[in-house]
Length: 101
Image (cartoon, rainbow, N blue to C red; front, side):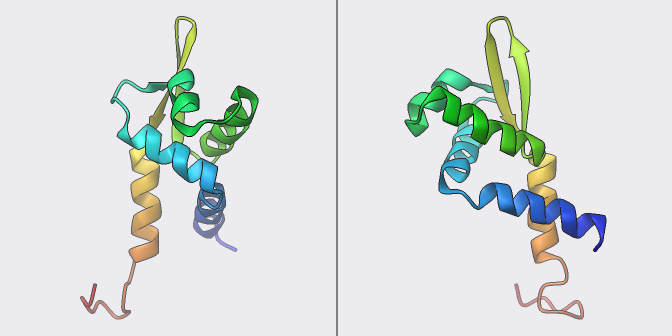
C-alpha cells in the first residue's frame, strides 16, 4: 500500500468519530492564532481528558497543530493537510480527466 493511501486513510479514520469531526469544525471556525483547549471543551461539551485524547488523534493525523502560549494550548487547523485530503478524494474525479464534478 502506498504511503499516500496510508496517510489519507489515517486522516479519514481520525475524522470518522463524530466528536473529532465536531472538534475539527470548531478549530476551523476558530481564530487564525488558534483556539484554546478550554474553549473547544466548552463548545463540544466533553470532559477535558476526553478532549485531550481526541485532539491528540487529530494532531497525530496532522489535521490540527498545537502550540503552547503561556498556560494555554492553542489548536489550529492544518489547512494544508486538510486540503491535501480533500484533493486526494477528488483526484481524477469521473476518471480520464473528465470534468463532471
